[in-house]
Image (spheres, helix red, strand yellow):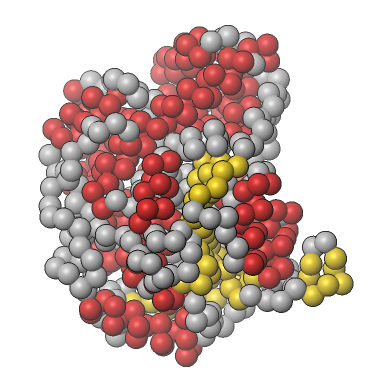
Length: 546
């Protein structure tokens, strides 16, 4: 599902019942027809044994990295049913445990092994994750664990996928109609077909093997290559789905697992219905943002009610359609920029300030936030390609646009902010040529795995809270810690001391508060004046999602 990169383990670093159930059969379990079978399980065991024997030869990382961080590659089968066939290499990064108590540098801390982090997406890399050890909220964890990041299969530099030329990826300025015309729908259908065709042509016959089940299998090979008998893992957003699949496939290989901002693992929701539910949730989060802006009308002058703020936004969108800012920022770029405010509270001041400045005649702050950057085109195109491949391969999707049209038209009546933009992003899956899988029935039985820690914000739009409740039901013995009345996507290792206390207690001592626990929300962001730059966004430590 559409998800941006998380704070979560990056420290600061993708409804109503409107959807149809996609055509195709019911989900399976390992060994049942249509589900991951014995060949893939045997192939994973073979690949893991080879990786354990080979180990990881850590050396210098590409580009500028902090002292002490090292990189390596691990070989994994493209197709786990054929472990002796074609292989690809995943790039891995690591920062060794400091083994020093942050509160007392003379006290040595026992090393607890490697902690592997997946930042979500699909399409995001965690190669920069080991840098998080310098952030205060992560220093205790960094003292006990080697922090390990990696680029999942398809994500550069790990056998990167591509669906179109990077220079053609950013189409700007673009439109973002909340109630598209029939002509606009035909245009987007044509673009979706071309994109799906480009994925098949540029990625070749191996495209079908870029999927969530193989991401989970890769994780087990990485565990073995690191020399770990059991995996300690933190997954954020889509990374929670990878973690949940791993716990289902390899329950005996789990040591400790944190799943932050949980994707709903219900097989019937992967991924068509999940995206509809996400669009509905973003409408509530968009309302949260407008309410906050209205409370600070003295700072921004965008309106003293949420409705008035909406009118200011609509005015800006209409102006940008007629005259794109800097020739590059149209309604589509505006919508994407404000969608990020639905992910992270600390984006609220900068977005509100930029909108206020634009309406008063200064487009520079908005252009800084919203204009596409040619320097990031290749990375963004690669992330989009991996997102499409994984979600389209993972599950059946409706192949008749009339189904999409019906469901999204109905949803857009009550949730116009993200609905159609999200639909267009996923529409290539309707025309996908690679074979589809049936989602795994995620669940663990009593005693099969150690208890798992699930973290969730109650008003998270990218991964609606019902998904955390569902995951809590499916993973036996798991604990759900909820940040009440909050909506930032990814809560572990952020500003909430209560959440972080549970995270530290679990990862460092294996302690959990019981089946359910709650934390008060983090403070709301403070407003900035329209002329200001807003909250610093420290993008260097962020992952990237589609």
